Image 1: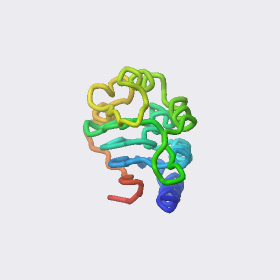
Image 2 (image 1 turned 180 degrees about the vertical axis):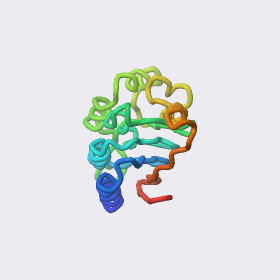
Image 3 (image 1 turned 30 degrees about the vertical axis):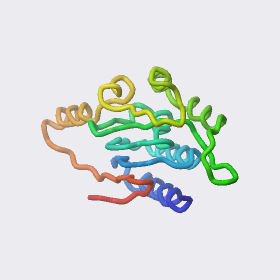
Image 4 (image 1 turned 45 degrees about the horizontal axis):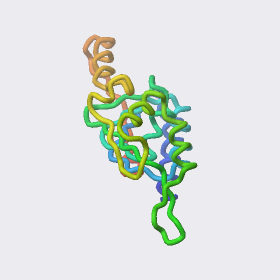
Length: 174
């Protein structure tokens, strides 16, 4: 787990230095330790890169909603955010809800996300999913960005390098 976090951090740092016009695409990310995600998303925020959620963004990955500015973030029709209470393993390795971790998550989420979570039962051990039309007003649609990009470029398609994060690992696809 620690190695994956370091790989992601290194990829984000490299990307920030090499390509200001790139976008980060997050897909099939199952989450991990809150601290790692906060650190990596803070680095990503500082690059100014556009972040596309294009699939599952679960658990600690959902912190993207509170760390990355709305103007840098969009979601495709495949985007699905999964929320649950934070947990830590006890002495025997079994998960135990972390009140401090859950409070940290709560404080980082924007008000619209907290409101949605409250309407769907709050943060508990059960994962709840935010997707589809429920994302309206919380995360802008990437389709909207694509339409505006086409209009600004007189219907020419602008190709930019895209990096993917899937399963906590970053890889380049061109």
